Length: 382
Image 1 (cartoon, rainbow, N blue to C red):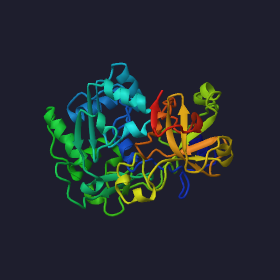
Image 2: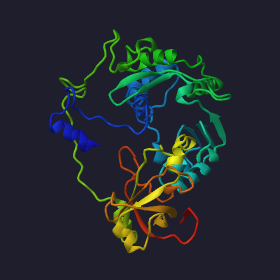
Image 3: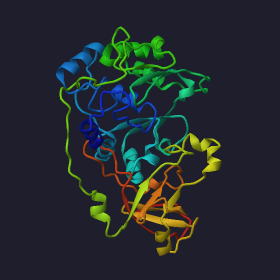
Image 4: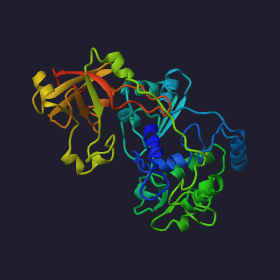
């Protein structure tokens, strides 16, 4: 990520129409979530929670003492749970058991906490470990905003009635706040944006009635003036900032390549999304019914593997059986598979080594070895 930013700076691809770095975020509204302060080192508006002046601003606005310490990122949450330092976890709309790396560690972390709350649309692998399940509403059943990679805040409007017993995420959170003694009105998109405009500087001029069909690009001034292009004359921090990190071989290969000579990289298929909790409940399931392992013809030949045959893929964390698809779409020595189906649970074998800054796990490099499958089992922990 830093190298891409450096490249844009070096080549001058900033501050003009049609240039810049446009991140294709992994989920809709990842940008909006970050804007609202879901990262543990920042509050709403990317303000530093450890800065006393920032913390004072939050405390005065909300009328309570807002935490001033940096919280845990996801891999750190699991480590903290296993160490007895994290007592409760509230998971909203994410199947961490199926989609996070090193599935067995994730399960142990959930089992180590005193309370696991899962807020979901459907029963997922994670929900099976919940002490409490809160039925949320889908995006079609509620109104709010999504913010995309060009900073465009867009209105999402309810089109179908909420399923019986379910509630929008915002309403569930509001009701929980009320039960815990912090009085809040019912959730509405108008009320939410009114609050945000007062605490997030670049939302100052955004309101529900101004979003229209195309939304508004932040920063939006109080008078409603939006910003199509950032950094036209200067950066907020002053001069542009370059950062160099020399290349290092991944520890996954340094530690395990001798006994596990293949590299497995996980990917997604067009028909399904992530854990497949939604897409596996559609007709897409008739198009793609199972995860499969892409393997180069030469590697398949070496192990006497035929197309459609089950292969045992083993890493230092465990092993799974998955169907082979012989193809030259992968290089020799590289294997690739999806993780859409819980009966395979490919993340049983992925590692939880992560980068030092974002704590993003290394899904794309897993040291493995392969052989023909001996049985019909799908997953086994080592």
